[in-house]
Length: 96
Image (tube, rainbow, N blue to C red; front, top):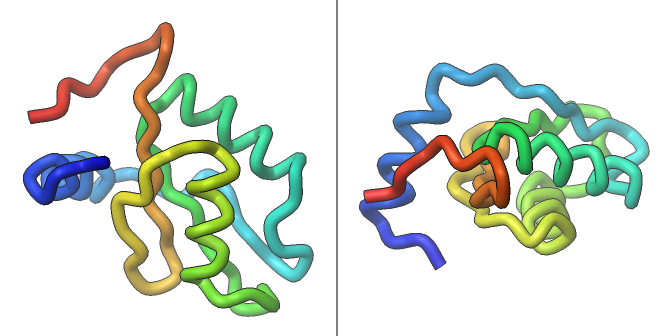
């Protein structure tokens, strides 16, 4: 579990990132979770955008993605979800 200080640090790091995944009409599926998991291994921190035509609530999508990828949910702001997962091989971020 992340502390408040760590979440604040990660939010500041994520601020400049652009969403690299979009959840649309199809919602969350296994293939998307697999791809996001691979991207998290490389980047550790990423944003996912929830499109307006998505049938699921953004909080549900955030929950499914974080549990599916075993990642930490840093923040849900507007329709953007910020996820963090410590990388096994490409560790870049040093949490406070």
